[in-house]
Figure 1 (cartoon, rainbow, N blue to C red):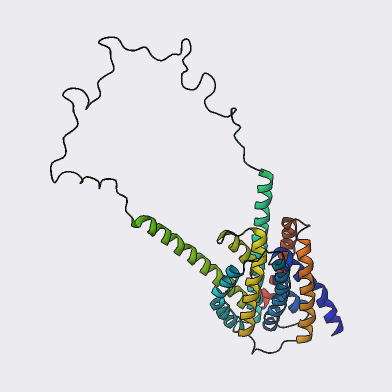
Figure 2 (figure 1 turned 90 degrees about the vertical axis):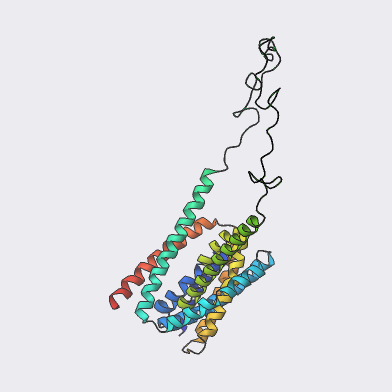
Length: 334
């Protein structure tokens, strides 16, 4: 037991470090660590990982909250919307074959690794591109000397007035015999004052449609995150952070802090759903979770000194290796 507890220490530190620095992703290492290093069954590991993830997220959340990087209302609402998915995922996971569960988990890890690599690649391209070119006044395309409206200089004066018999061409509708057109007869043409009147309901309908589409995206994303948390015992921060950035428009540091609140809500809901399963090694989970809490505190400090793109790339490489190893082990047993 002492050797197993000693093995749990570095695993918990790494998981907490990634949770604090990236706001998610580290929790995906909890299940493989509990299964392959601490020799627990997949169902017990996915339940125990929720304890580790929840405590690690709570520790990181406290650090981010002190720095003002948590949007409590948005995080609580996002987590509450995912409770239905969390409940369904927990029930589905318990009834699944252990080898099938680990094979599906390997697929999830590969998807997470690819998503993080793509995100790091995009951030690298944005930095390499730099800010867009700015137009310098007086040097860009536009009217310059001799190219603007003709000035009243020699050779560039206004066109000479037309002499007698060469005046401007008469405009239709002006001059004798060309007065204003008569008003349309009754029953022909629009009534006066109604030709250009806008439809008052159009802006309201557009705004309502945009709000409904945004609400549907938020609800679908929150349900998917809850499903992942309940089924695999992961926090789902690798989905929450991009969702909070793209859907709710939060800045990256705020999205990272707020995602920890979402992870805490989802993991707590999933654990309550699985509370009657039993078989949890509480002393082992306590030491594992304590290391995760310490690592999350350290990760919050590391995030200010290390580029997140470099950390994401290293983490994605590690997850890819673990996913391939899990797939090679679990697929032949199916």
